[in-house]
Image (tube, rainbow, N blue to C red; front, top):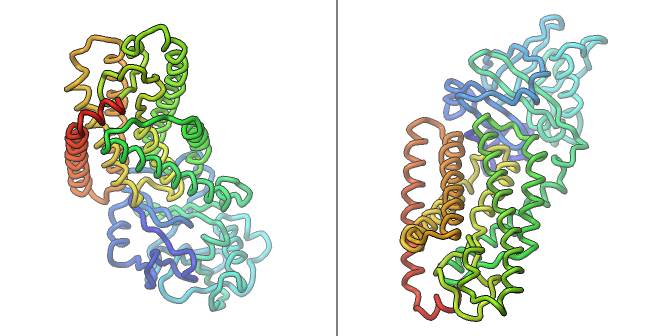
Length: 421
């Protein structure tokens, strides 16, 4: 879903990260989003919209929708006719807080409960703002998102709005979880850069146990974590594809470790070339120098690392439309095309178990790349033409990047290839 990241300190108004002016709903990009979207979501992590998607039924089905009609200098306004009062959502001018609570029994209605929840989250110095008191109007603003932990979904074509309160005791919303995910993302990205450096230098990439364990734990934790994100249906399909793909690679890495240990036990009795069918993930040259242990052969973990990075960054931003999406797609595509060139020009003529395993892994990489290119880029596009141009550009850059990597690897001196077989 196209999204705008919000500043969490620009009380009381909603402001884009790094900007100072409040968001305008009656003109500009957000007005176009309101006109052409079926869903617009406003939460602590940002504003997102989508033209063809719905919110997950498990998260919003129980929330009763309330009428919310267009209002000047605000997202919309909901009228409480029984109280002759109104709720104004995210104004770009003055923000007002009700001076007195509702009458007894009024909280039973969805609007009455929202009025009370918003008043308690914004009333007082915690909102860091000047409060304009009003008896008949209450303005929902940034403090409701940050301090009140409220989320809102507007259906512009229907003129309806739903809301909910996030669980403050949920570990996957805590600061500790965010810090852990951030550290894991930084570590995994360093491993991606290390793999790229080894590819350019013609060196082998070894799979260590702590990276494999971290991939397994991160993928397992992504199931409950992403279940708390308001992903569009296309994003949920992509999430499942990436999770299955990551588990597929972890299983291969674990089995590869077993094959390497088996090869170590057989290394004194069997020539290294006889162990090659057990090494479907060995990458650069097909022949290992004499005396090399199978565990020293290179293993491709770039695809699995990119898949987990996409899952974690999408969870942090509540959407796949992140600044890292294009970078991850280009790296994944370039690595997949490099594997295609290696298989086509080196291993396609070899009718062996190793070639069949390489083909299966190549097909899995291709399917994952197409899923990322189609689902992630399409949900992040703001229009059909934007999607077509972005997808074509990313695919072209990926192909050129893969061809460049292949040429760089081939241009290394033969001694380097013999050393790092």
